[in-house]
Image 1 (cartoon, one colour):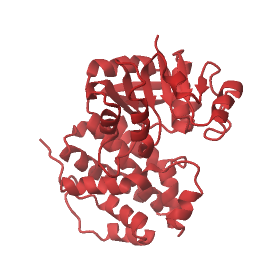
Image 2 (cartoon, helix red, strand yellow):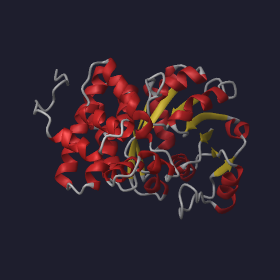
Image 3 (cartoon, helix red, strand yellow):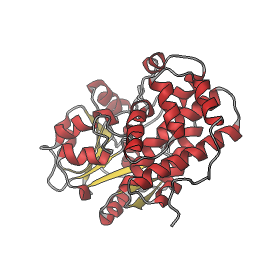
Length: 338
């Protein structure tokens, strides 16, 4: 067994590292703060990000990046999307020549519109066949406590994807493989935007029919964007697509859903963000998702209204009213069916 380094001790990075440690994989979790690493090593807890959760005693942590990377043939990148480029550039000359880099980040880089795996390839100077992404309905607290769940490990190199599957798969954490990295990443980034809209609908008390309709229509526009970027439409009906979308839109644990609920209460976005201890990726990635849609001439009505609420100060109720008064259209408009 080779040592695995997980870079980033936030909620998802810590939960994912816990899965690996429970799988008896030698795992080193890198934390930005030494006090966080010390707490994980001494008390097997990370109270800042996973309060009340007990971590495996075999999980080790360090604030020394070189120590984390030493001897690691698999490096899992669990930093927020806006930090990914800098972290990859920092480790580019410090990882083993045959390393596999695995991105857990869900987003699109704002100024380049690159997907996360593309950022990794560019900044870490690693070919695409050595980069994988992990995405699915994976709420960190549920994964950390060992609740049954599933995810997708995607890599253009199918053999590498299967090797990662063998490392990550556990009785309570089922791992499926996919070679459609583009589709998996677009689904993971865009669902955060739809989750904000779902939170708005919940905040206004519209009911389950309304939220189900919004989630389903959100899946259509995510799929429309993905297939116009070259993704396999089947990816969007799998775990990384509809699975992740449902979990994020329906869960009170979702940070993006929380942002939507607070917008419905009339709170200003800056106030919402400043009161949160963790990043809501949809707030950052919405603009990039909309710009991607413009580039490939794809209509994303839900995402565009979320963008107005986030960046232009539009009233959240106006966002919902705009959607309800749109002209009806064929259900799968803009998605090739053959």
